[in-house]
Amino acid sequence: MRFRAVHRFARISPTKARSVIGIVRDLTVNDALNALRNTPKRASKFIDKVICSAWANAQQVDPGLDEDDFRIAEAHVGRGPVLKRYRPRARGGMGQIRKPSCHITIVISDD
Image (cartoon, rainbow, N blue to C red; front, side, top):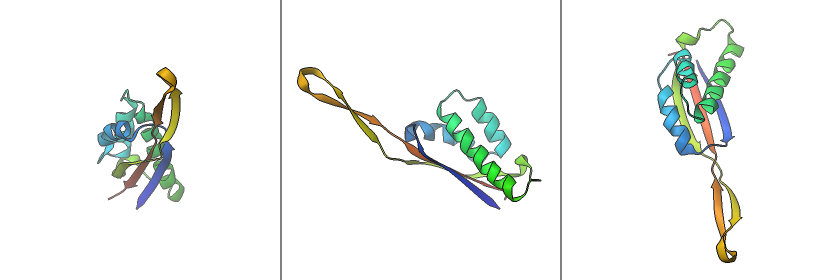
């Protein structure tokens, strides 16, 4: 069985999230959560929530499942929309501020 969870429009840059998502690939759900909770990156909190959501989806189907039987089958980060803001600069100009977002997808599987 495969269970999926997605966090869309996460307010973190995809580059920063990808550096953390590489840690959890091919780990069991329990090991992935332990690794993320000991990682001092901001993206680890976003990814932790997505893994917990995917595990909650699995628990809805069968409450008797064990976390050690499930692995992270797929974990990827896609680009989301970029919020563009402007800030005044010297001599009447303006500078652009880009606030990127991303979509985090986690699939857990028991095979």
